[in-house]
Length: 181
Ligand SMILES: Cc1cc2nc3c(=O)[nH]c(=O)nc-3n(C[C@H](O)[C@H](O)[C@H](O)COP(=O)(O)O)c2cc1C
Image (cartoon, rainbow, N blue to C red):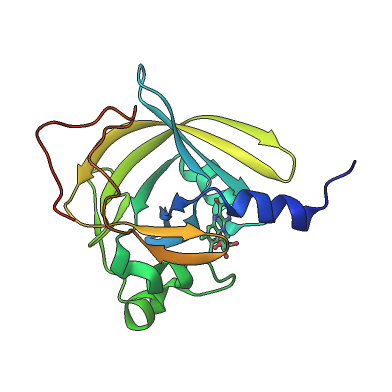
């Protein structure tokens, strides 16, 4: 039985994710790309991966700069996600159109204001896989803030709901933290 691309996308859409914007310096400007094919890979050393379409402009920028930021978007940053998912946008309009403002790290990597978390990454390995490249990168710095994430599920943006119950990631009920219903 062969699976169509539409069926594959529908199935993958059931896997709820957060949303990131990959940021890279491009000739002194900020180049950003919305990405949810992002995950942690290793704790020792600290590695993450992001999968980037060969056709995305970001693909060439990551190969040439070898250093990039992963900005985990907060719930109120949907406009920024939409802005950086559009092909062909000039990034000078990011602030006027989506309210995206940036700082720079000591390495010159762009950092998005208001993101829930930021990881500064240095390219480790790039592995082509079909029409995408898996960029594996070493994490050099992180910043984490309070707040709720922007989510992506079945092709739509979502907000996180109330906690369903007090349990940790293994299902063990917590005795100390009780959420009133
Ligand atoms: C929620 C969401 C997640 C996305 N995730 C990815 C991804 O992980 N990898 C990718 O190559 N494109 C992804 N895209 C598509 C890119 O954001 C889009 O193709 C973008 O225009 C590429 O920009 P660029 O050509 O400036 O690099 C995603 C789009 C959305 C809306």
